[in-house]
Length: 264
Picture 1 (cartoon, rainbow, N blue to C red):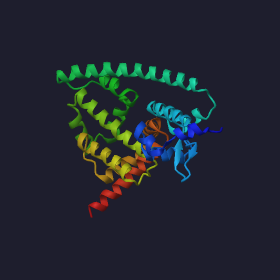
Picture 2 (picture 1 turned 30 degrees about the vertical axis):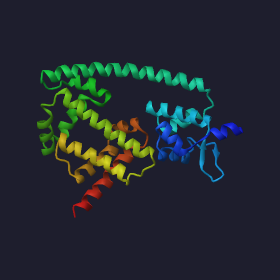
Picture 3 (picture 1 turned 60 degrees about the horizontal axis):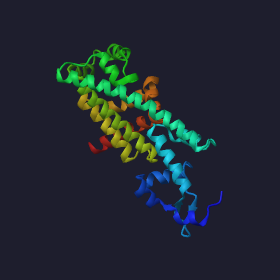
Picture 4 (picture 1 turned 90 degrees about the horizontal axis):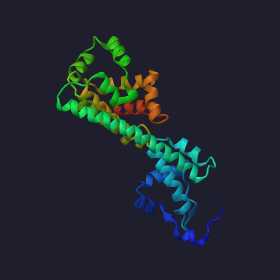
């Protein structure tokens, strides 16, 4: 497809797109490298130029990312030849489904607020409302069978026995933020050995240490291995983003190495 002179003149550089549309330069470069969004034009000096068609594709990518689709899946959707209106219909349906989900979550949070005001501990049913598929009574029973005699289990039970729904909401918010940090590092092309990935791993370790039980870098390393060894943990990460379980495990190991080096 040829681009006319007027469209080329109206095209934007990477920096201009980043400033006007709130997308980082690093993200744009990453999208270019993986072939998800390659600018159609270049200046005489070789700088990337984004045309109107490129910006429309970027808008679709941003919406799909906000719907938690992986970059590979987005690429397949956009390169499948479907008209733009089909993408918009798909996005609209996904957003409506998300609205229903958020409405249910708001109701769960309202119940949590009522529980917090009465200062009572959260019930398993309320936790299930809050955490959705991530909470299963069977996990708790299995955990007690496997680690019930350990100091970590006793410490965790002591700390969490009085947690209200507000406390568990805070835990969930922290976990979501940590997972978002891992995803951001992955999608920026940062390796698991990068500062961004290791900082996310350290945030995860500190959350365990502060919220549940003493978690040293070496103990956290063992947990990272379990995230790959136990298919349920692996599936929970892979649902967030393909390849995330391995990435999180590697980042945890890298962070443990970093912490041990600092402690010498």
